[in-house]
Image 1 (tube, helix red, strand yellow):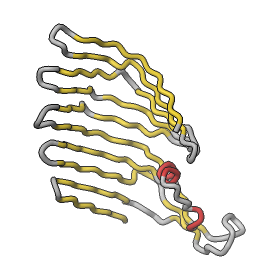
Image 2: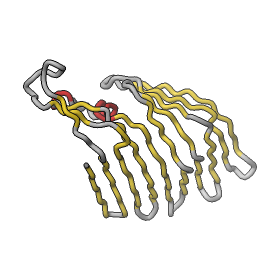
Image 3: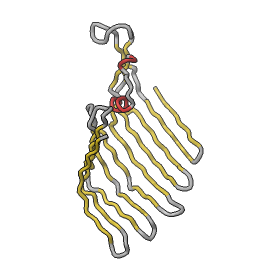
Image 4: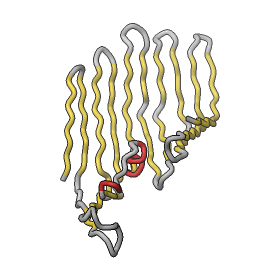
Length: 193
């Protein structure tokens, strides 16, 4: 895995030992030898962070970043202020969204060959998360169709293309995965219409 990180930040410690910083820019590039690449993440605007020593509390401000991959598309990652509380009764709170995630990226990362199964498509997804980790984990996450469809090759024995197999759209109107967790209880729901 090759990683390139570029950024600019300012910050420091005050008289009480508390830290404050502003990340003015951040660009991350990843290249996995097993996958096409590169994958790039770029912070869209500065983000502030602080750590209060007495309460062992870390706060990271709301921010947004753009994500691009080796295939077409630009996804947007955004998060609300993140709070982490250290100590014996530690906790973490994170909430955010991932928008415009192309299906092609997910199949690439999963190393899935949809074409071999007679499938193709231009689905785009949006994801949300809301996680609190304290005495127990409480989480809600979803991944839902934003746009696009799946195309199915009707005759797998025929070559694809205008002279070959018939290709039909699946006609997906809704495609959603919801996961809820509360302590030891985890529930997943899948909707397809």
